[in-house]
Image (cartoon, rainbow, N blue to C red; front, side, top):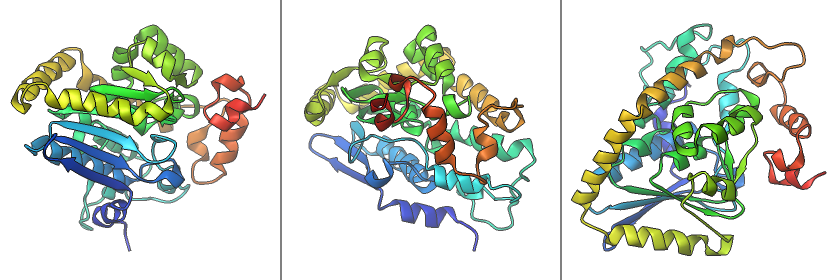
Length: 322
């Protein structure tokens, strides 16, 4: 049986929790998949986008806190699930990513430019569950801790405020293993060109302190104070001016972001990401893309990570090793 978006979203409901306090108008969207470091599946992303869309309309919501259970906010997308889409020799339909369950619709063949680019462009839309916070007309706060990588880094970049624990690490594994990711423009705007170029070209994760210094993070506190600090920010935001006023403020900010090219940048960088299968690799290069679907990705990652200085490695355990 083909994979359907409906089934994926049903499965994802056990991993995404949503609740709201009508009195305070604070809602919480919690990623609850700690055994997988809150890695997001297709179904989780679709459900996430839908819940943000609902919160955007809901008059009982003024502030949305996005967080994760366990030790980490999250490590990005589910690699095992993505690996299946790139299995060598197989034409895997990605229609479920677009919430299309109609068997009469044909997805482009794997050797087509549109096979990857169509999906990357979908991620530049709020409905794709990657850029959803950009069009959110309420106040969004990301609570970051542990790993804040990949898709989770998107959310931190797109949120209005970021409250972080001291031990948090920010970045995107794609910078090290693939080279591109579809929110480059926004991160340049948030971090500043010089520091973002350092992250992009070295692939190293930045600490919460570094992200605070470049203006990406609003507050950094010890892990045991994180929930308290997030609540302080959420409560202050919930008490300041009516929801209508917030919508006007957010509309002003959205216009400013579009003047700065946020959506244009998203489209440009997804076009770059769509060219990934055509990037030529020299002998000895780590070709993460070509390895998907036919080898042990974990082994590739481990070998490459060990070649970097400990303080530049992606994994916390790897950073402890000399």
